[in-house]
Each structure stands twice: as C-alpha cells, then as structure tokens.
Image (tube, helix red, strand yellow):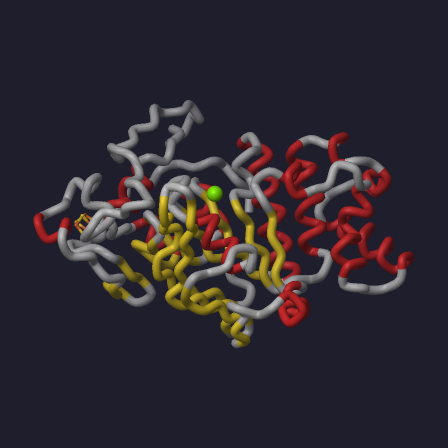
Length: 330
Ligand code: SF4
Ligand code: MG
C-alpha cells in the first residue's frame, strides 16, 4: 500500500510557567492509504499533542510530517491550504467542535463553503448525501446540534469531517464520551465509511479495547514516546513491552454470560512528571521487570519480529489469555 503519512523524529514541547513540558519526544509513524493506525496510551502521554501536531494545530519543535510525500511541517497557512482538505479531525466532544449557533446543514457544509466547493444548491445535495451516509435523517438539516444526543452529534461531526473527502481523518477519543452501545455504533460507522471511501484513520484513544477493534496497526505511547508498535493482532496477542502488557491486563473483561468481571489493573503508580521525564527507560519507576540498566540507559525502539518494534531492554512477548469483548458486529 502506498504511504499517506510519514512522521519522522517529531518533537513537541510547550513552554509554560512551570518550565518546558515534553509532550512528544522523537516519534516516528507511518500510515498507508486506507489503513487505521491506533495510537494508545494513558491520558497525558502526549497522544493528543502528537495528533494536533500532525494536524498542524500545534507547531512541532523538530522533526517532519509528510503527507503523500510532501513535507507539510512548516508550511505557512496559505501554502498549507490545499493540504488542509486532505486531513480532518474528529474530537472527543463534538459539542466543542460544533458551533451551537449554526444549523446542522450549515455546519456540515461549512468546510465545502470555506474551500469554495460547488454552488449553494450543490452543497446542499452533498450535505444531504453525507447525512444519509452517517445515518442522520434529512430532517436534521435545519435543526441545531444541541437538539441531538452525544452519539448523533458525533455523527454530525463525522459528516462534517468527511465533506471534503479527506484522505486522512484524525479521530481523537471519538467515542470516549459515549456509552458502550453508542460506542459500538460509531465504531461500526467509522469502519463502514472506511470500506466505502478508503479513508485512513489515525485513531487516538486511552482505551486499547476500542483501538483494537478498528486498528490495523497499533502504536503504544508512554510519556511522549512510542514504546511498542505492531500489527494489531500481534500487539494484542503477544505484547512484548511491560507497559503494553499492563494496559491489556487492565482492560475490563466480560465473562461469556456478559457479567462484568472486576477490572484488575496491574499498573501501579502514576505517569511521571512530563516536565522532568525520568532518566533511562521512562517506564522504569512502574515496571515490574526493571533492572539496574533501565534507570540509566534509554532503550531504543527495535524490531523483534517482522512489523513489530519494542523499546525495552528485556522484551519478552507474552501470550495473552483471550478476553471476551464488547460484542461488536463488524
Ligand atoms: Fe521495564 Fe526496563 Fe523494559 Fe523499561 S527497559 S520496560 S524498565 S524492563
Ligand atoms: Mg487527549
């Protein structure tokens, strides 16, 4: 598959009153056309900053972002404009991204109007077609976002993101604010739209079970760095980084009769201070396998199997018992 997005050695730091916050620290990622890359990690690990840097919403300090081979890292707004159409974003909370004073039809049409696509009447037809694709009734056209539920608002946001037929949609925790049955509906919708349109997703979430459902490959992020990167099934079935193993163990499991089983997090402690990342492996303070070398030498991301990279001095792929998941039709 051809490469849509390449991220190389990307670094994002924020200057704040407290000092320099290291949000993204030397990240490399690739995304092929029509592929979904899941980006997973605890809140505060830098995944939203990485997503925003890719969207050119925050300025990276170093590194490169290439879209279809074109370096867009430092393009000024006017030069960036033609590329803007190719990547769109869907946020966790649609209420934040949808202007409540605009009617649904105008909200979805806005990107088309901004990029001067079609006449008014053509845009209306395009919007109605989009609404149908995302499962919104045509009567929603003249209503306001606040008249809809969270799940319906997320459908509006997705229709808006699709309007310019982007090659890439960055989804930042798109279902985290929804309850489980609505999550399933939105994930199924995203999956279907991908099959129909060949769009690529960068799917950002703290919830590995959600990411696993959509992603072809998964990158696990810890304190600004990618610590494991693999094909979704390989990462899920045989994770090699102790942090990934802990994330999987912490996924709430359900038994075959659908009763919830107690969640047993084996991850102790909190994410270290991103203002002063620890020396050596950034996970060493929480890692059950840490040894002396871990607190002094930072492990590099290295290949342990085809398509599987891990940043750990002692990587051991551990077969996971297969938990039963949310029963999502696909
Ligand atoms: Fe744990 Fe050491 Fe591996 Fe870091 S390098 S994850 S501390 S074993
Ligand atoms: Mg976030």
